[in-house]
Length: 85
Image (cartoon, rainbow, N blue to C red; front, side, top):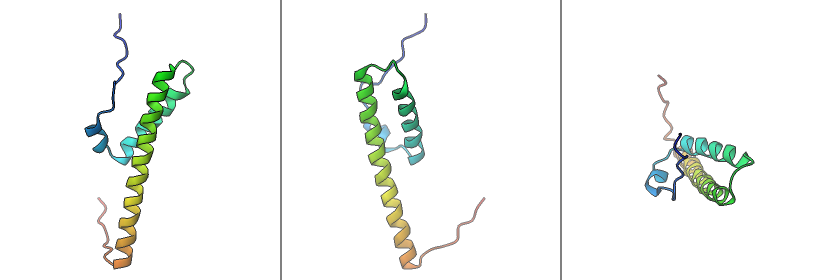
């Protein structure tokens, strides 16, 4: 017999802090896909929704910080060409 699917009881906060924007977006896609299933129990759907909202808020924060950094660089004239590999 196969083992039952493991579901995390709580979100590991240390893991959340270290996730990149790309990892957050990937996880949001997974959450959305799962929520689109017809057989998601209500409690699991609520947990997934809550996790997704957290990822969206964190992603918005990262994007806002990045935008400010870009604006500061452009205003200060400290923009340098980057070498592409």
